[in-house]
Length: 363
Ligand code: FA5
Image (cartoon, rainbow, N blue to C red; front, top):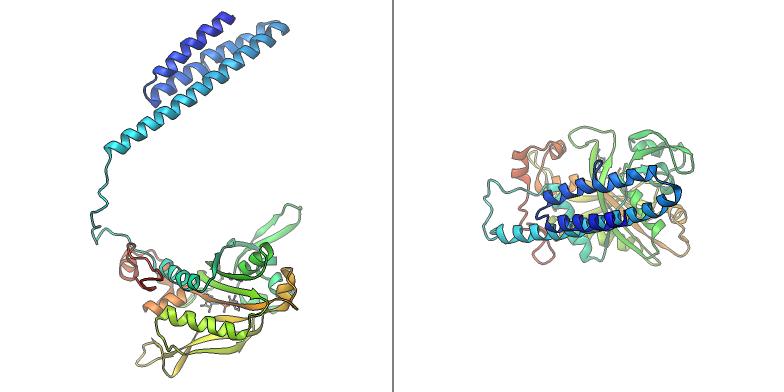
């Protein structure tokens, strides 16, 4: 039997080494380790042996099996490398060819807007943070100072998911986040102050008309340290909207407003004019609301383990579609999600010219 194993090992090793492609190697593998393979057949002989014999033979067969499996793996890696080398030397791609305009893909205005915003906020020293679309009630509402049963929870028409059991066995309803403010909470919970983050993402509300869709995108900024005040909030927003709309003297107005997670809270308006049914961003006689802002509420800081006597700062958030519609003159929000190629070719952006801080935010 020992002799059998040795000669079988030599025979199989030769077969493995002479397999010149992956298909041939797999045939060898099946003939050795498959259901009707030679080593599998050897294993089956163990049943008829005495206890003592089974122990030694069993060990020998297992060693053989492991050795052959290693040899096959080794040969497989070598063959894969060989195939890749052959492909790399035979296939060539001329990347100097300019793409044909009619076939070239386009960057969706949402992706473009997110990249523009990233460039602007990165230059101000913000980091990008992320959070999950499927949230729990705590991060979307409770930690943000929405009291249980408070009507403010109804301000955002929430999509609740069916009740599920969590790791502790508690039953709870998850939900689709109604705003990106939940990311503030997750970031503060998991990181040490100071905080200076920006976040972009999908948000969901039961809403549908010309200016509302059930899924839309929001951005959220958060800055917390020991000194940040309302003046910094105003300065940051003014710099950002002026850079985004590329209008140096764009008027910005802060209007007192209520959000449970900020105190004081303010709605952000930018100047515009509405003449002859059109809308023009810039100095004019009218105002347009673009988002909400405020100083982070002491309760929110406490909920995230920060001492409100020591730390303070601002947060603001706005709809990304709204920003894109205003900047690029897109009249209907619903068209963003209709996947109409003609729309994308018209409103989309050149993928080869991405926004960056050197060339400006527009492509
Ligand atoms: C909020 O969601 C707050 N979390 C913003 C905030 C952050 C305030 C930090 C203070 C501090 P609001 O519900 O107003 O606020 O929504 C913000 C923006 O999301 C709106 O101005 C609008 O542009 C956009 N938005 C809201 N609902 C929809 C919708 N159904 N479709 C498209 N955009 C929407």
